[in-house]
Length: 313
Length: 286
Image (cartoon, rainbow over all chains, first blue to last red; front, side):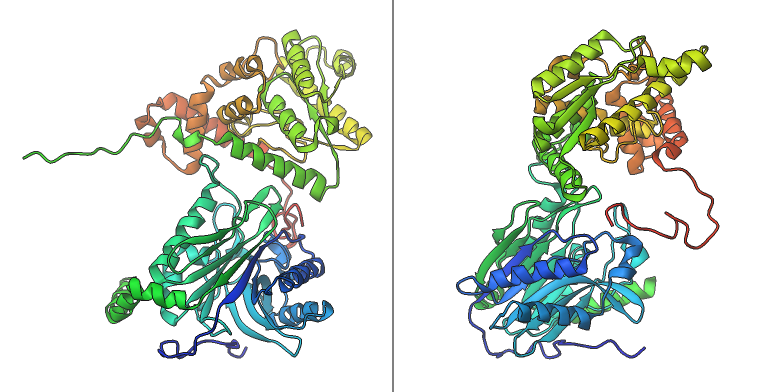
């Protein structure tokens, strides 16, 4: 098995005078896939992309939830439903061709990936373009929940990297669900240079004592906290629909680099959130709250602490 | 100089099992619609109404999810045991909801087996025969109507194994199966189930004069708190510190541990590396 392809990893994220992009429009879609029906779900994804392309102005980026290609809970069915990243990209690209899209659109979408006979819970950041698009980045879920209602560790292998990558709009990163529940994941991608984090999720509702479903409220806390600490945009797309009694919460969010929730989708219903984002908000937020710069300044000592922890294990 | 001291607030004893009933009701209605209409393509719900709070809550949820015109409530008394009060309360539910209601008297069906073959049957065996007979009726009526039977078992009785295997637990969908009994009471009050049904002592009504709490030897309030903490992983010592007696905890724990089998399908002997449910794993909605 050769090395995994590195689609668009940023290697020089710290260069200071990168050209600034203008405002861009993001559409965050939360939809309910049909369980284990890849063709039907591709068609649904294609319809949403076409809908987002008809906005005025059209969306530049459309974000879909974790495992939107198949549904989340597949158990042993993962191996039947997983597809190679290149196949998923080709199928997404085909959707835009079929629908006569004339303008490039970036898409973030979750799927079960099959690579060399191994399944991963993965996401693509792809640029779909009638003149030929490309896979910009592929992220494999790093932290696989394998407790309680979750059993990912049994059926898929975990990824081993956090990376940032350049897009047409902002240096970005993708995290999948539990990835962002570990504060270190967002810290690492921010250090790698990400100014936007696409967080895709499939989160079954638990905890019904408060005004909001427990894990939905927790997600809000997490995303606000991450966005504020690292001055990054967060585009979170969360699956909806019931899968065998487990209701996926939706409630997708867009959070500004100042830690403000600027758009929030309803609980458990199909929805598309649309937001126009100004890349220079990241710079302004970081100038006023230089926590990431402080961390970077202390990075040598932080790494030393990590090394000590590893030695102690 | 004395520095002010601030103590952490003591959590309410009820806090761990508190629910927001409005949020729960909306979620369960969405669940019912998704599972019954969306995934299985049925429009009608079939509920056995006993006159107790669990089946009343289930019927109220079904009426919200599918409309009273698509909710079919069946009273299935065994006239030698079922209390007239239970039947009256079941009628009350049907009347309040304006849903379809029908009585199917199972006395002759049960006695057809019992009187001819097992006249000395024990009350608990008779209870099981009644429960299984009710499921025959419910599934047949569901087929006739073009509907799906909806389960009514709550989490407390499921954890205590306080149900008849392949009877109460057999409907394919159960909206209240993850709610403890005390949570069902809270939901019932929110849904507007008549107080006379919510506030009466819970009874399986399989044996004359029987109540659940007498059978358990502990109140539902205490039982639910013990169950909640045990299944989260708290040890008996911590439960003692919370004010539960060792006897209460031991009684609940032993019943919980002795009834895992009732919460599973039949055990098959594994002979291959494609054994269903062991190697061959697919979710219910796959």
